[in-house]
Length: 481
View (cartoon, rainbow, N blue to C red):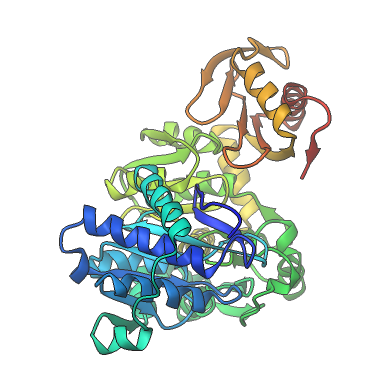
């Protein structure tokens, strides 16, 4: 294996056969096993849940992870089919295991795969854990650990149990959701799991709630139709077309491991996840009468803040990475926790992104308003708290240009687009908040030569002016995607 193992915001990911290999999976799994044995009491008997998505050879990589853990005497609960990340998270909590390993690269292109480690509290492991696991995995990779016992031997010794966590998870959603409210609205919905592990979850509960459901791409395709399984506006064009053709109320999508969501309105337009978070917060507090704060990453829209102010509830701001939001959910501080990249979870649920739940809550919200369009609900919210428009852009730079940007941001400008910068937030990147509440965030990636630009304003004109200022700070020669 030519490259070392590096954990990013959502675990270790790499290109299959080039970076992501069986040797790497063995090393990471052994490192995780050693970590839980050192950190958690009764780790061997409490065990670890192992799940996987629909990517190429994911079940074989999962079997290798399971075998490696069993070799260390750790009980393994191996999912019997591809399983969504939030379902594994719920199973960790339900069984009270010491954690979970999921073989997934989430929404990345088909040639990628990865290992995500979830802690005993059900959320993605925090950097204090992953740094130790990463260091030990790299040492093991150089050493090449022995093969250990076979899967058959692990089963014979009672160390490995094959499980189907689907029904327990669906039962949990039945408690969290108001399916009767959805049933009364008689919604027509198109569902797109994007060939991923969300098949048979979202569509099943919608049918149970009396919806007329059409489904796209509900079979396993490790190529994901030749593109990334990402529920973005670009990735959901076929879903948008089908929603318009069939005159559906909604189009609902989940990504490769069903931890992210995508929402399409009745006219085929894509609803930005940033805006949905504000809408959903209003719904949960007003229609469902839930109580608590709201958590969001530093890069997430302040539409959430505007709604929270109206509702008189606290806002918790975190670095980018759902693990930080998940920690607040686990501490029962939040009604809703979310991030701009289509991740959310709610009070009383897993401290992990759940795209299945997000889609069902969108259906519940539309049903509460008699089948109203998403855009109509957003306009009503804007009328109440003010219009907020937001954008995210990625720029690929050479490493030298990234360093120059870091130097420029060490002393950020005092004015942007003719307005005074009244606050500089360095929680994650450099976020410059202006006197009118608009803001610009520049976040150089810690693992690749990419800079992410986030901007937010009250009008499209002001937003474009802020984006222009951000581009100027980044410098010329940047290619955007």
